[in-house]
Length: 220
Image (tube, rainbow, N blue to C red; front, side, top):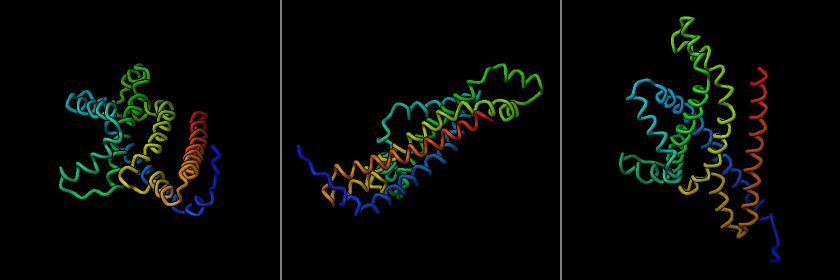
């Protein structure tokens, strides 16, 4: 096969890819921020001694662990507007799908970090007269956070990569914009090669920053 590579057509439509990159970063940032907040609540519910809090949180996590991510995108975009009688755009539906997914996995990151701390730490805090909330804030969390960093970063990268599923809802993230450029230029090999490079540079850059941050936290 003697294929003639030509990236000129892709470069002419580079602004469309940049627009898609902004869309990817936007939905990724929204989903990570909201996912962390919701994940923290779910983690607390899963560790609660109250069964009425623990069981729903456990079922929530199990549901997202055992269902395909794309199904969540379709459900929020096509089903939720019918069920709730509301209007739902691609950005809102994709952000909801990614946020609820990420919350389930972030909750396990948080819970895993906390339960990894030896029970003796809790007992020692109790012996000092601390309430459970005080022990969590002053003794457990400072130790647990260091153990959470690596899985938290890994999960965040997975969320950024999962934003590509928003293309199925015609949301203008990077992959969707690449599909549009490929249909215009008839150069899919060049387009998707450039897109792969953009994803790599984005995630590699974030990975380098994350490792630097992780090393600083460990030193401290």
